[in-house]
Image (cartoon, rainbow, N blue to C red; front, top):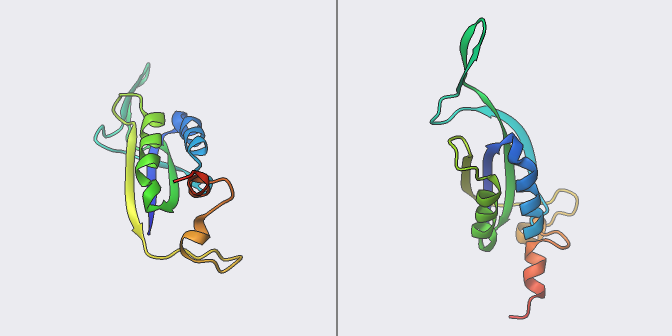
Length: 128
């Protein structure tokens, strides 16, 4: 019924990804600043005094919980907005979510992750 998307991207692509998600109708999300390394293992910097490796690079992590039928569109929006074509563009992880409960109302499942004007509500208004 629901999935969690965790996307780790370059810091300079945060606004582009956020805008792409908003345009798609993804309203509920969390963004966290993280540090990490992937295949590239970091970057080597050279200064007059020598060189050194920065192996934990700053990144931004998006966390989104959404309905199964919105996963592919969300992945594609993130991928397109975060893409530079260079190593280190990031990764997208998709996890199953067993249950979602909105603390303030006690709503569960899809009702707990639905917001006014979000992708699910937009789909409901489209004649089928």
